[in-house]
Image (cartoon, rainbow, N blue to C red; front, side, top):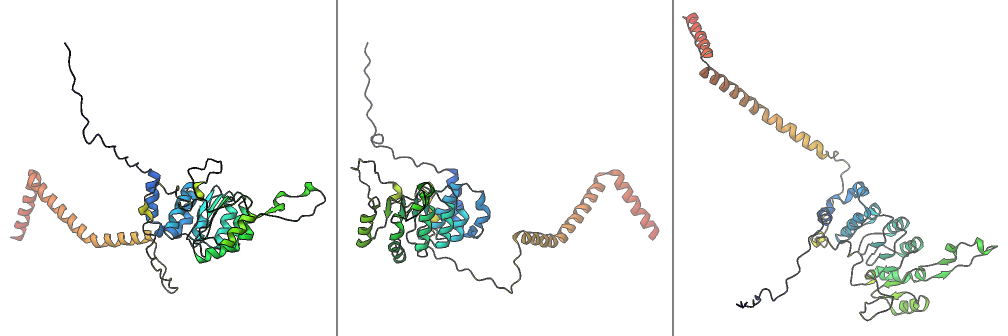
Length: 326
């Protein structure tokens, strides 16, 4: 006896591919998002608690501060770590002083973005080139001041040989022979002028200017993601953090009134709570005492109503008082 099976027809819903489910964010990313939303309130005290953060958390806080327009020399130097390999301070208020300090601390930097930094000059770039021998990627330009600084830094970026005199070649120091950005391979300068481009092409042939990714490039010289102008340098650091964290970056900063030297010292928050508690206790003390007296009288009345001996003693005392009055 043969049994025929009826083929099942797929439902219309099953014929369409399922949309990829959203990957849940990590707990660390959620915590960084909450911290970033209130970063403006704690930015002045960041040096006190930043010392307890690991290097990758400090780098994430730095990226959030940059997006919220809160990055300056104080924040940068408070978060700097010697293990960092990338540094994105684009569009910030960092100056040459802060950049020089970070260059001395983070000597392993290989990619730096100083584009749209109006307070950085050739002095800051010189410190980076001098103290970061592994620098491979440099991003600059983006605003008139940064464009001017980039043009002035051509002589700093070009590798050069220094003239040294010693009695023997063994006494020569290799660090003193060469100069310039010897390890620089990628320069991201979107609005580079023709003269600067020709100068770099002639004297720095190993430096690729404004590299573009190509799917047909099968050579080993693949363009790193850090060298693509369309991708922020610190994109992978905050990739798992909710963009709402820095959604208020374009909002105008709240003006901070200068402190009045004649004003009394501000009371700490702990002392405010203590004074508020003392004031509340003093206000509720009479009500609490009245309630205790009422409860005590009610308890005595209930005791006399329920206990025969106590009620007899109370009635005898009342009768004796009446006899004395009469």
